[in-house]
Each structure stands twice: as C-alpha cells, then as structure tokens.
Length: 350
Ligand code: SF4
Picture (cartoon, rainbow, N blue to C red):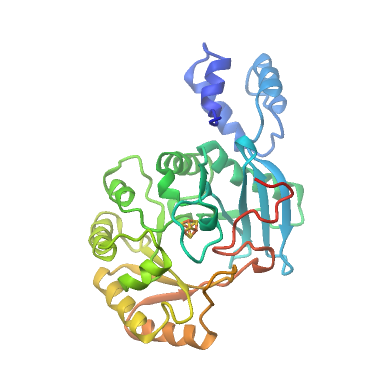
C-alpha cells in the first residue's frame, strides 16, 4: 500500500473547497498551538470535525524515544505507513539549540559498507508528509518538555536513506520547510552519497531550493572509495569534480559552499596518500569544506582511525590550505550517531 498524501486525501474529502483551504490547513500544521484539528478555529467548524474524525494529525507514530547519557541527543523510532519504522534524531548544537536529523527512506539501496542503514537494503521511500512530520514530531516533543531549549535551528537530511534517491519528495519537503518554518536555506543541509544524475538535475531544476549540500566523499582515491561505497561508478571522482565546478559557479558564494563528508576508517582512507589525494581534489574544486567524521563502530570490518591519525590527517589538509573540521560524535550510546541508524532497538520489528 502506498502512502496517500494529505493533500490528495483532503481533496477527496472536500472536492469543492477553494485551493487556499488546503494551504491554510498546511500552515496550521506548522502552528504548534494547535494540538488537533478541532482547535483550528480559522477553518470551518464542519470541516474541522471531519478532519478530526478521518484524518491523522501527524503521519508518524511514536514507537520509542531514547536519550543519550550526556542528555544532548534524543533518538525517536517512529512508525510510518505500512507499519515500517524509521529513526530521527534531535541533537543539541554549538549554540545550545537543536538540530533535527531526518530520514528520507526506510533502509537504503546505496549499501555503504560502514553504515547500518545500508545493511537493511531499501524498503521504501518516504512521502514528503512523512519527512516533514519528523520535524513536527520534534516540535511537539519540545513543547511537551518545556524545560528543554525550544528552538530547532537546523535540519539535516542525514538519517536513514539517500535523499537524492527520493528526489521529488525531498524537494517538496525542502520547499515546504522553507515556506512554513523560520529556517533559511543555509540552515538546512541535504547529505548525499553522490547520485550523479540527481546532482546534475539539481543544477537545472528551478524548483530545487538551494539549501546546503554535503557530499559523502569518504575518499578521493577511486579504489578506496569503491571499497567504502560499493555503488561508486568508475569515473565517479571525475564526474564529481566536473559537477562541483558547475555547481559552485552557479550557486557558490560566501555563505554557500559545498561540504565533503569524510568518515575516518583506519588504514582504509586515512593514510598520507589519502590526505594528499583529498587535499589535491579539494583544492582543484575551491569553495569546499571538509568534515571529518570519526567512524562509529557497527560491527563491520572497519575500525575508526586513531585520534592521532585523525589529527595528522587534519593537519595535513590544513597545511595544504583546506578548510577542515572534525565532527563531534553525539548519541553513540543510543546508536544515534552517523551510520548507526537502523531501528534495531525499536519496540516492534519491521
Ligand atoms: S551512508 Fe547514507 S547513502 Fe550510504 S547506505 Fe547509509 S544511509 Fe545509505
């Protein structure tokens, strides 16, 4: 069974309503004073009652919430259409506000070797409503916990799934988030493993909003990249270089750079050869920031690079003029960190 969108069901229930009515309803869904349809006093009373009876208020259902020991990360396992489970994470950021990490698919077809989601294979892509409602879920969660900071200042598409393999739903989600929340395009990041046809599409799609893009590069050496991301095409690095030049010419500016994510794997992509190749690759492209991610062990053949090796790697990049940061691992004790999402701790099985 496929998820039928809120809009399609609304139009079925109320075929003669003017177009603005659905937009009004949608706007209301981002107003957290409303806890159900009956409270939406700006829409006709009869309609409110029908919505209350026939329409779910939020398309994701809480299954489990876990909180890290450090109390700066929450992970929610949520049920979506068809009883499938996804995970979404709420992380405290440097400013003490929150970043929400959303999933775009149940499972993922990209099969990255270091990633728990990749081990699940692709089960289904999420509908735009189901992605948006992960953000709405956290907004209501914060409202129920008034002692916590209330502001969500960033959204990252770094949860389960490859966002660009669910292009249309992710595009719609981004446009709605920009329309109905106070977040601007630099506060939202879509992370991709590098789906070349979709990246090319972005270059010429007038409806694609230019939020930040983070590309999971993981190696600028073709054979090691293929070991980490087996779905890598043979000419991947050449294609990415060509694409990145075009992307930055069209959309790059002081606020809008590209990010290369780089998971640090001991002996696999952290040697002096790898840092040199990465530095050369980045410097050829230009406006790129590199983010090093210490690997979170999920029981694969990989190990995280040592602290010393990460330091050396970072210094080598800095010495070559690369803008590089190291990501702080959050929520590892509840399997909420990068590469760990897989819903294995849910109350029910998928
Ligand atoms: S890292 Fe991302 S793209 Fe790769 S398998 Fe995991 S979810 Fe998919």
